[in-house]
Length: 136
Image (tube, rainbow, N blue to C red; front, side, top):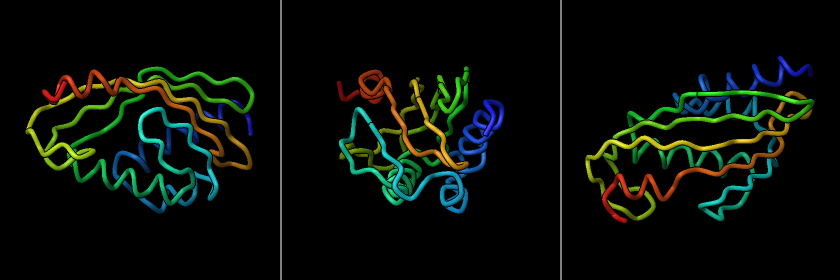
């Protein structure tokens, strides 16, 4: 895939997969054994874990969505600075709903192979989010 195609794949994943929680797009865009180097959860990798995490996030922040603020790519790597906005309306990592709105940014790096995301690294402002929820 070209650099432009790699960027388009990640944009599609955010807009058509992650934001609406469309699991069919997860099946198309993520490799079954995608390796996820998430800084906060320590969760196992794999497409099914991504789906579970997204559905948990959707339950906690039903109006939540990600916006790509910046995107760049080099060869098979796509770099994204993304912004999450949502209202905490359900349990989130053991925190009962607060009704508070949050805005949190993160840096995501995706490696693309065979038209799918095969590796993902992320560093989110988890502490900032917890502060906005009033638990830190």
